[in-house]
Image (cartoon, rainbow, N blue to C red; front, side, top):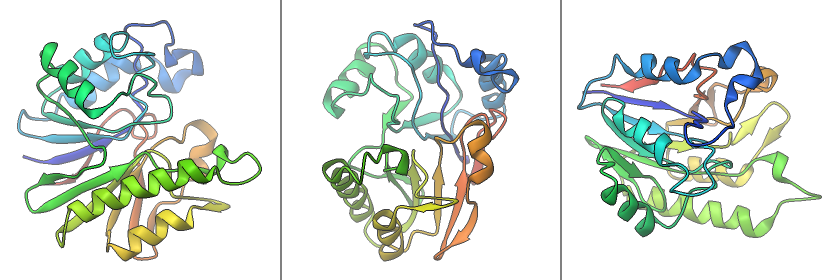
Length: 228
């Protein structure tokens, strides 16, 4: 049994928005995702850090969700900025049950457990969303969701997962970084960055938290192992 993470699968099995148009890095990416997961076992857990399907609704994303469901192990899904199919927790869980998607769960206003470690997270916030300043309503919503998740973990060791990077060369989201410090988060994994922007990613320990970029193309479509 092991814990893994990866983000930004950008599947389009039920639509025509393949990522292969973005060049060699995305060539045959669906097959490469399947190959990357093939080393995992049925009792492994993978947190998927958002941007999972280009579908505009749950129904349009069904082929992508079935693909994810068929990958080895349990998958915990998070929302990314392109997950337009995302809906209320109750509706998604009902949709999963109705369609036999029995290896999927969601990380949203809650936390999950891997042994005695708490898996916490939310979509987050990123500087590119600024239009003359923070959209305060969206930022406060994401901060609330993150704190709800962290509080649900109590005093347990916390691993945090975000879609947006909370820090980047030339940018920081101080509000999210403050919560990570206050709740003693030792590890934080994030996605969203692709292509040339990955060179500006910040990895390694900052402010007491170890940060790692886990976008699928950055990981060569192989889930990153966190721990056994």
